[in-house]
Length: 275
Image (tube, rainbow, N blue to C red; front, side, top):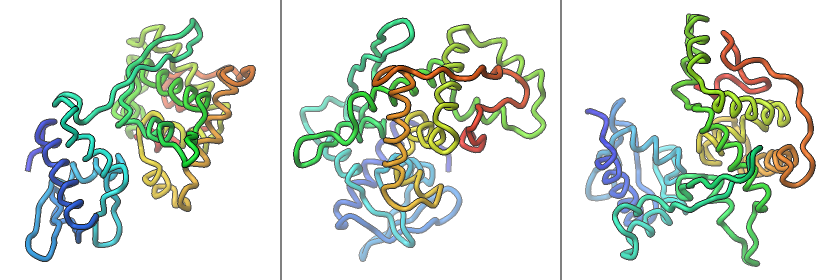
């Protein structure tokens, strides 16, 4: 079975969420083979692409537990937004808003998909008193490190090429040579931010803010107890806010090694997180 295109994947995803909702939130599920999952209720069985199920789990739309898949609150909210007739087809699977991100040269306006970003979902969620769990300063710090990550041209694919066994030093130097000064500056800022946080907090921020992993996925990968990723993230964002001068004066960081050197990894960051 080939990998579904964007339109097909979106249709499969909506079908999955609707099916789980009709089945009181969960269904018996198992991997049929490397390419497909099978879900069963009392009357029928349903088949879905494995790649789509993996994306739904990663984005926090569904939760996997032994022998079943369940619809999460995020998945339910996503489905409700899709079914809202006030949304046009182009915006059914995204909620785009503008953010002003503070940079070294001033403020820059960027577009953010609030439905895609775990950080945005945390910031938009309010308690019974109408207060957000993250402060505006903490949210701004997370958006800034993500902006630098994207300006630097980083992605799991590029990072994995640096970690590939047998990779040549000439190949790494070639990548560095093609980077603009703009991208290199962003990478240096990202390096400084990671060095301030240390290994555990840096990996948590990168996974959630940059690789857009859900809190449950981060906890599952690290075998952490529930809600611990949320607390780790807020601790890291407070430190970043101070580092960026959003809350307090930024601290000076030590000189960094060039990102293009052969075998280089960001200091204090687990290289496996970049694959």
